Length: 295
Picture 1 (tube, rainbow, N blue to C red):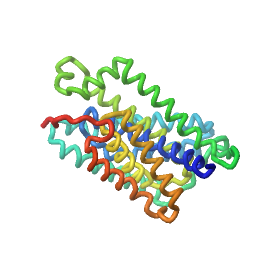
Picture 2: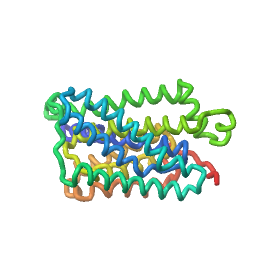
Picture 3: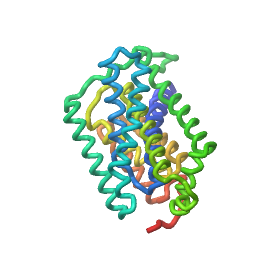
Picture 4: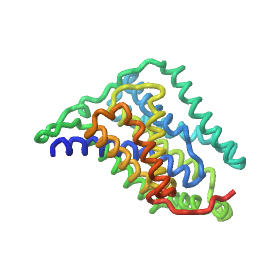
């Protein structure tokens, strides 16, 4: 029983990280019908920026994390204005190519600026402490991750459902052209969407670095792909689905490896197997709805 609880804690922690990143994918897709392939690299930048703010300044760790998160969110807006906004009226394949190019650009810039060697992340001591409850042991960070995720999701739920900006975001996701005719500032709402998604990715990157304290320029590639898969599993464009998809993916990955340790080398492949099964059984995802694509 203790073995199951141990893996349950690990699965909830990992699933919460995936959920944070998956929401960014699903928000952007819900409004622009765009897969932001550079989202995983924003995740990576959040971790690196927090590392350099911590090591180059004397600020407390929480202030360094906050500054890195805000700056990463602003970088998300810059990415949208430079790589996506100029192509908004073009064919969607052009925007998709731009997203892939932006991802490669950020990864190679990170290698150039940060170097290709792995760097240890200085995990704050308070987050690195171990707790033992019976035969189950875990770090403080494993508790902090789902708590922070839950708080951010509640804040996001309030913003989307209770504010005028959230109302505009929902209107834009429902009917882009009608929203424009109703006087909604399209550029502002899209920038806000990228800001929120990038802030969540930055928080996810920082928490991921605290949980797995090693920085690499390509560290966002596989988590980015997995979180895109999580968004598809839940029904891309649906925020609740993104959270559920992230939790399913995290729990499945941990549980399969926990109970079948011989498959540890194949853990990244489980996400693709789950994706294929979901696409066969329910192509729209668990919470997705069938709608005709507008040309």
